[in-house]
Structures are given as C-alpha cells and as structure tokens.
Length: 99
Image (cartoon, rainbow, N blue to C red; front, top):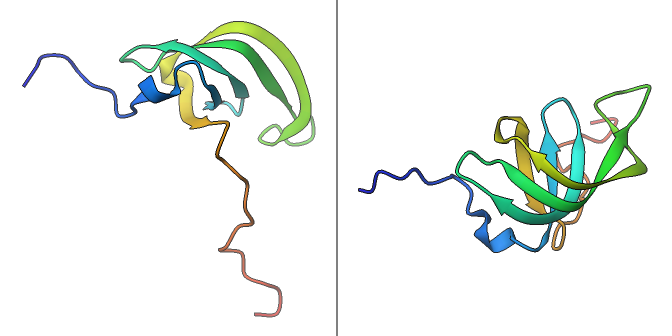
C-alpha cells in the first residue's frame, strides 16, 4: 500500500469541464475545473456564483455574479457535480395531498 492518500472523488475526469460546487453556508458556484489536490481544494476558472434569496438564505435565485478565477477550500466543499448531464427532477418522495 502506498503512503499517498487518495481522495474519495476522482476529479481527474472533470478537469477542464464545467462543474457545479456547493459550499458550506449555502453558497453555490459553477465554473471550469482547472485543478484540485488531495485535500479537495478546487481551482475554478470563469466561476459564477448564484446569489441567495434575501428572504431565505438557504435558497439560491437565478441572479448571478461573475467571480473569475477562484480557489474553493476543500473544507468548505460539500458537493461537486458536472454541469453537463444533470437534470433537476421532481421529488419522488413527496406525498400527494389527500393521501
């Protein structure tokens, strides 16, 4: 066994592709993954942050602001997903009214 720690995620397949990153505290950013390390620190280029709803800070709005080149600390990264190939679906666990 090698002394090098491997990350849980294999981010090599996402390099130079669009990713969506959710961070602790409710922030959500999309951009092109340019690099990463074993601590899950991410470098994103052409990053765009989705602004949060002033009434409910846990929800994001359609409003965005450009950030450019950013580094996301690995301790703050909660979720990394590709931008291409993902669709939002209806929650299958919500019970219809009257059930």
